[in-house]
Image 1 (cartoon, rainbow, N blue to C red):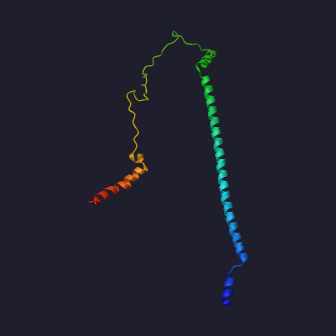
Image 2: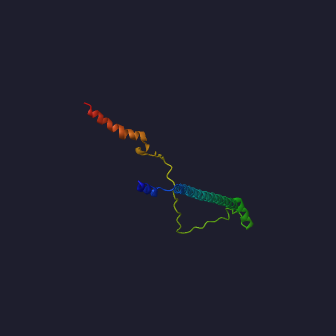
Image 3: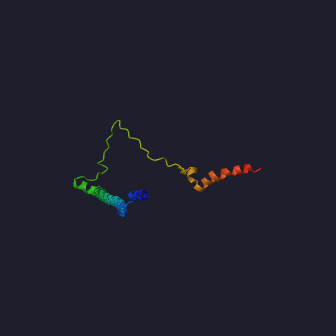
Length: 160
């Protein structure tokens, strides 16, 4: 009996060891939760930073588009007929009269044919989009067709 008791006492852990094991397990869980929270915060911070950078890039694109539109407006003003007439007169040009106009005939010149970029204005028939039946069939129809209806002919054949 003494041998059994001493054998069990040798393998029974002391209460302070059990407490240390529980404390260690608790700290391990706490560290694991802290690591998961840290990874989550890191990913969230990176996502927010990249989102802000994307917003900044969108603002830069909008500003560039506005600058381009302003430059196009300015160019259109410079190339308008009234402005071009003013500049031509200031450079010493004057409007040509029919008496001042003359044409030069160039031998061998062939006028290029006109390029047709659009179809002839005939009757066009709009084509209706065709969708395969597989894409218009609902899940319930498919189940009815695959599961319930194939069983119906078998049931009718068995009945005499």
